[in-house]
Image (cartoon, rainbow, N blue to C red; front, side, top):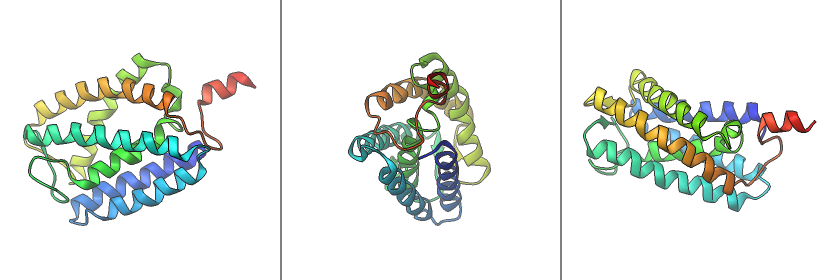
Length: 183
């Protein structure tokens, strides 16, 4: 999947998930994510490898966001399995996020410090955006943002390393910087 399509598809899935969660339509995001993941896998050279990355990201995200819920730092207006677990639309978003790791975020591979800084800053910012759209509630905003920043600073390099090992490849994907230097 080329970079632009990957980025645009992620945005569609992200907004569908957050707005669906905010508007009591928690199924809307996972439905969009299912279509995007299916397209991503269809375009992958090794879809079974890419699927492993998507599932691993879903498990990691479930644990991370469920810890935030259990600590009562974040809450969600809809789609909850239980009061101690992240909603299913957030889990779907983690799987959606995995589709970007080898494509539009592939430029961070081999750059763990850059990935950590990006996670530290961009991780909390996405949750703030979700909060402003009504999809996320902060019970303790300061604690939540600190946990999000630290968590994402650790997870991004780990996810990028995992993506290096589970790279199913696809037409038009890859590290833009490496592609440019190979020409």
